[in-house]
Structures are given as structure tokens and as C-alpha cells.
Length: 270
Length: 356
Image 1 (cartoon, each protein chain N blue to C red):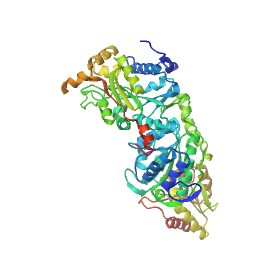
Image 2 (cartoon, each protein chain N blue to C red):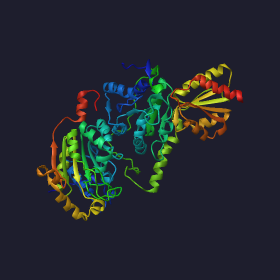
Image 3 (cartoon, each protein chain N blue to C red):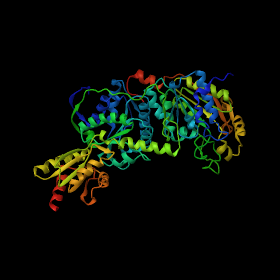
Image 4 (cartoon, each protein chain N blue to C red):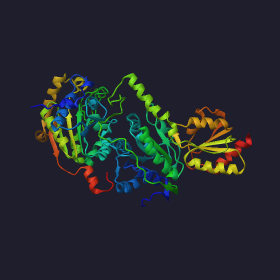
């Protein structure tokens, strides 16, 4: 493949970044910047909206517009921003704790409104910034700094959650599948309405170490082996399903987005 | 209600706030229903779309203020309205607006608290919450109207001040003013200059940041930012609505009050003047930054200072901190959900003068 000039979107002078060796956030950021270069956006046409957490520091390393909100609230800020600037292409990059724990209310309502935004969820299966605590997306039985004997609670599937809530596009993959990752990001950004791509990404410093998966390389192999295509996953029995993450495209549809409905309705809307 | 300009209208405080917003060219309101502020959301839902604006009902007050900040960054003049429990939820993002310097207006209709309290009864007990509710050293502007006309005038001014100082501005009213119908003179629609929403590349974060919008943890960058955020407001207080002074220059008794309690104080001072008593009133319009200089100047000349407020002494404490000898400062406080009456203040004045 010919890699387009994505470095114009990178704030090179801000490097080195704060991410640990073997972290997947750089892979996600590069995939995003390549897609932006392919789609050839101007700096003022796009905005990267992030929250609080490791992945959300990505805004410090880009040359185009960045908005960093408070923990969990990114999509609520973007709801107002998109009403003021409907033509601005907004990409949200948030972590699993940000979107599935503290910010899950805003996630559901942004999907329900079908807000025109592409949400990239960097799911590293734990809270990395604060030292590796479990999140709602951490698989059951996982060892984390707040579940030393193994996480007891159930794991949430945010993809299925936002599908039911009304998202136009939902997909999940891992940084191991870089081509698929770029394809899903490209489709999500190109789609009008709410789109979400959940990206499984390694945190060798905490999740990998606590769960004895190994270093960066072993974690990538682990994601390769732990993910199965959606159709194959659906044929598994529920017990077997607990051992795997599905990957693939869950939904793709063209329901009218929030702003279009709001404008056409001419009245108050939520 | 149809929109009419330059005319006297009969409006509640809540309605006056909405029309001030619309006439100040506010075109975005995000809110969540809460007594006694709900009418503001209801009227915005009806009127904003007619003026090319947007009303959005968010999932909670955290989302409301977040959407307001987002819309403001996008170039729409934006506001929200709430009451105590909602203000508590908004605090983190009010701090965000202070840190990221995003103009926005929050109308807080005080009700009896803490917690759910009594949803329909008035109080003036959010004075400190508006100032220090969000963590960290910061400054912001809090205005306190005492009636319908001031709800209109000060809310109108709030939008201009929010943009001039690039800060959140809180308009602090209470359940009585919110529902009290009075004559309000509505001004001609004025045009504001939009200072954001242009084509420049915007970098915004709530982290400590340098002048390019990139995060930083350098001690020098941090100190410079935090100092500037406070100084830009505290160093320019003359641009904010100043306290209004009535009565004797060298009073036996000086009343300091704001909001609905100041209305009662006005009548009490009038009645005292009829008795040839040297009494005066300092009615605070800007609560934060606290008008220390005026209070120190006028307070020094008074024999006794009475602070009338519907709480246990939040402003009284600040008045003492202005450097007025503590023994001459006393409070007229009420925390039984009823308002302070003119006769209660007058009785207090007479007791003070008799005992002197």
C-alpha cells in the first residue's frame, strides 16, 4: 500500500509522547492520521475530541484542531459543538473507562440522537493512566490493581449497546489488524450519523503484566488469538463466547442524523 | 408571548432572563428540567427556534453545561439554567470553562438546600457554591439581580462580560425573583461581536496548557496561567456592575444585601429615613469578585453594618474579611424558607440605634 503523507497532521515537535513502550495508542493514532491523509482533510475541517486517559493524550501530538474535555463528558461537549458547527468533522478518541464507565450516559444519548460523530474507543482493557484498575470493559476474571483475585463483574459490550441505542455504524477490531482498523476508521469517519469503532489495544505495562500475557509482542499475538470474526463468534455457545472478543462490522445503516432531524423539525429536539 | 422591543412588559424573573438572552443574541440553550428554573428551559424551547437558535434537552446537568461549552467554542452564544442540585453537577465543567476560557452564562435559580431541600422555596445559600464549587484556584463572575428589570439587565450584561473576560458568568437569582412578575423595560436588540467560531485552528484543553493550547506541566507555564486566569477578572473589577448605594453617607446603620433581601432592605431604609434616621443600603450587584473596596470604604464610615441574606451568613463572613472591625458587623439571616420582610429589617435597625 502507498502510505499518504500523514505526518502533516502530526505535531512532530511535541514528540516524544508519554505512552509506554509497547502501548497501542501510537498505532491507533497513526491509523487515524493515515485515514485523514487519504481523505485529504484540511486542518480546520477536522477536530479530534478526546477525554481523559492515556489515549486521550493523542490531542497533544496532532497539528490540527483538538478539543480535550473532562473525563467522560467528551460526547456531551461535542453535542453542543456539532450544533454550532454542523460541517466540522469530529473524531472522538476516548478510552474504555471514559466511555463505558463515567461517560456511558452521554455515549448512549449521543448514539440515540444519532449525533454525527465518529467515536474511536481505545479499549486497553483497563485504566492505564491511573495504574491499571478494571473498567466495565475489562474481561471477567482479569487481574487488575483493583481486582487482585480476578474481576467478578460482568463485561459490557458497548458495541451492542450503541447499536440498540441507534448508532448508524458500529465495528470492532484490534490494533493487530491494522488494515481492518484503517478500513473501519475510514468508514466511520465517512458515515453521517453516530459511528463507533471499538479498538482493542495492548497495555503491556498493566493489563499484560498483571495477567501474565507478556510484553508488547506477546500482547499483539494474544489479541490475534483472542479475537474471532463476528459470524464465527455468533456460532459459539455462550460459555465459549466468554473466552473471545468478536471483531467485524456489527451494523451499518443510514438513519437521519441529529442535526438533520433538528433542522427539518424546526422545533425543540433532543 | 410575542417579542416586543423597547417596551414595558410584565415578566417574571425567569422570563426576563430568557428575553435578555435572546436580545443579547444567545442562540443556544442546553438544559435539564429543575424547579424553580424550569420555565427558562420551557421558554427557550419555544422561542429560540423562532430566532434561529437551538434548544437541546440534555441527559443531565453535566451534559447541559458541557453542550453549552461546546456550542460556545463553535461560535454560538450559549447559556443554561439550573438550581442548586444541578449547579452541583455542573461544577466540574464550570471549572473547565474557567480553565479553557470558554464564555458561557449559567442562570442559577437558588432554592432551599442542601440536597433536594425544598424545591419550590427560596434561599440565598449558593453564594459560596458559585464561587468555590469547582476545585482549584480560579476566578469567575457572579451577578445578583434583585428583581425583574435586573434579571433582564444583568443577564444581558452577563453575555458581554463572559466574552470580554472569556469566562463563565453565573447569574444568581432565587425562587422568589424567578416567579415574581414585574414591569420590565426590554431594550432594542443589540448586536454583539462574535469573538469565536472563526476559521482558525483551535486547541482547547482543561489541562494546564501553554499559549499554543498544548498541555504542559512546567512550573513557570503553570504559575503564569493560573495567575492570569485570576488577574484578568480580579484586576478589572471596575468593568463589572458596581454596588448601588442609597441613603446617608455617614450612617448609624449600613445594610448590605443582594437579591430578594435587598428589596426588603430598600423599603426598610426608606421607612427609617422617614423617621430621620441615618441609615443606608449597599446593594451588591456583582457578588464575585467580591466588591471589597466599596464595602471597606463605606463600611468604615458606618457605626454598625447589618448583612441581610437568606442563609447563615455567607456574605457576612466576606464583609468581615474586607477589614471592617468584626464587632460592628451583624447578620439578619433567615433559614426557614420565608423571605426577610422590610419590617424585620426595620426592627433590627431600631434595636441597634436604641442600644447605642
